[in-house]
Every structure is written in C-alpha cells, then in structure tokens.
Length: 95
Image 1 (cartoon, rainbow, N blue to C red):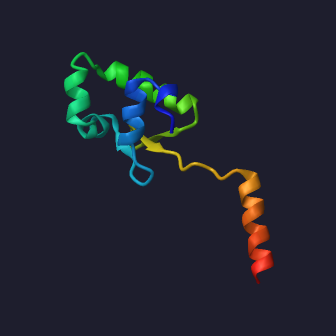
Image 2 (cartoon, rainbow, N blue to C red):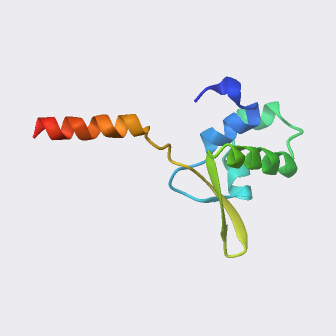
Image 3 (tube, rainbow, N blue to C red):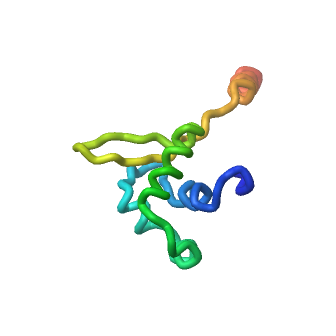
C-alpha cells in the first residue's frame, strides 16, 4: 500500500480498519493511533465520514448497515487472475 496515493487520514484509516471485524464510526475513532490524533486535533466526524466514503469509492472498504447502524470493514485484496492461473498450473504439474 503506497502512502503517497492516500491522504494521511485515509492511510491511517486503512491501518486501523480490520478485515475481520466490522467497525462503527465510534470504534474507528477510538482505534486511531494517539500519535495521529495528537497531530490532527482539528479532526471531525465529518472528516472521518468523507475519508471513509473516498476509500469506499476506491473499493478498499465496504459499508455495511447492521441494526440501523453503519459499520465499515476492509475488503480483502483479490488475487490477480494471472496469479490464480499460475497457482493452478503449479498444482497441476506438482501432482
């Protein structure tokens, strides 16, 4: 993951979000690193929502409605089709 292609907030959110656990906006805020929050004292929930939406548009995270609450989870990166084909070829020739 290239830090240059994301805003500092987006980069921090990608480090914070989980592949396994859906997180509410409050959980995300609480899990942000204290160093990041100390350096960004003007951070608002609107900034978080905007950054999360940008990451969703880039297809890096998924927005889930659960019991009238919005939660976020990181998408597991998909393998390239070429890598899948190579893996199957290796399986075929190794057996």
